[in-house]
Image 1 (cartoon, rainbow, N blue to C red):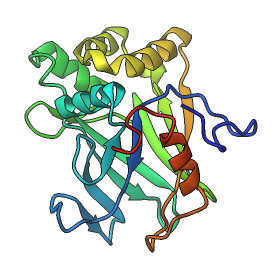
Image 2: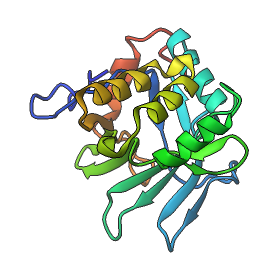
Image 3: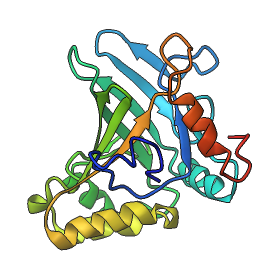
Length: 223
């Protein structure tokens, strides 16, 4: 929601839609064997967004709406570091099957949009439609998302088929994609990810800020 000290900083270009997502961690955990680190590619995958040990939402109505949508999408992400830097490219996979029968028309549209099939009803999202990155900062990461970077090469009917296939809880994604479509120009959004625990398990200076914010939320003692 842009309420953090970084989000409120006039020099930070916060311009995203608020979410009840609160916390994410990207590391290997012995209790989640499906998430593994590849030291050669410097990628951590597949990180589940629909529950478990890596993703958390507020413990209230707003949080449940987000989590239920993620469960329908069965969304997972891979965090891949750029070369020797700490900047990250995010590869996202989503399941469109729960919302619609994947007609031949929709499958052709997804192919033309640059989505890559990853199983029955599952697709890797196209960077030309939604490209998510994380730029390392002293306070954590700047989460940068570019919508419709390839708008000049996107057929309106193909994009319409994708928008129709998305679920009702993805209203924010639909809104941003439609805004970029109307402007016929890519739209880049930013929001800050504050690192509240360092790589050694120690609280950072932003941990108290996290606790203060959660104290203002319904059921703020729980995730």
